[in-house]
Image (cartoon, rainbow, N blue to C red; front, side, top):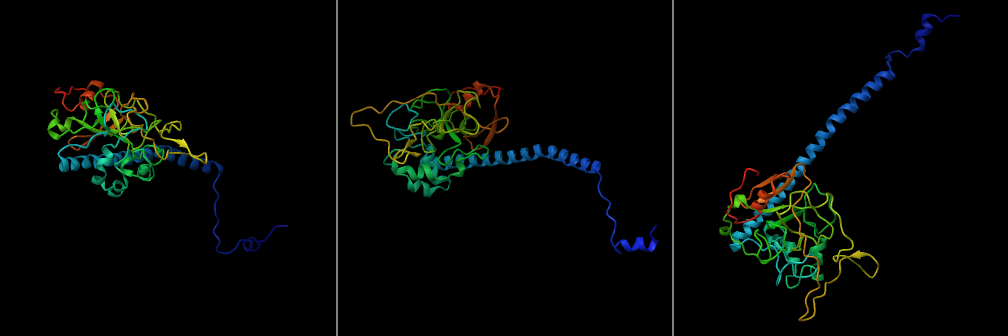
Length: 318
């Protein structure tokens, strides 16, 4: 028995458009096209994000080098790299070790942090625990580096042009008890490195510590020291277990008894500069400009840039 045309028409709701369905082939084609577009766009998005992070990192270096120059205008010398009675500086959590960053705090809008610091005692003393460990200072952090926690710096000052202990006879601008003036930059401020990127490594003693944590040399090829992402050495003297068995900072590193030498710790290596931006490492020069130095820069040229007064002409390897 066949249905009449009227019966067939009655089975379809009046005014309802017919919706043609996608075939399986069409769905697969759409998925392939979308996947291809995502694969093409994702590297571009990642590259754009890295360019933005690199730009922000450069802005941090601009802030710090501007603070250095404002300090120099106030005191006629650049801030000391680190302060201690005598050298060489040992890379462990013992000593006075107030560094160039501590001196610069009021000059890059960190007056409140500066007010927390007790300069009568060393940076590892419990009186300085709040400023040392609990303050997030974004200017000291490269956004491309995975943050290992509060209290660290992604930037270091140049103390020497060779791998050597941090002492009073170094050739950079920021070293032990340094008082370098603008006129001491006989090679020219625009050809002298002041600040650069470094990676937070095992045993890093933090942003206040005038050790390898915030001072580096140009005697090592760029990006050959450090590990991307950073790492914390939980066996470092900076960390101990408290009464509850939790890891944390010691309340106080005891001073040696009168007439007794301080406990011996590692002096070398101090280390060089390293970043994780593609192609090189960012630096702030003495004239205030910031530039990315290629990771393949000739070592002798890098050493010349780290020396404030070697009197040599830069080679074409720059």
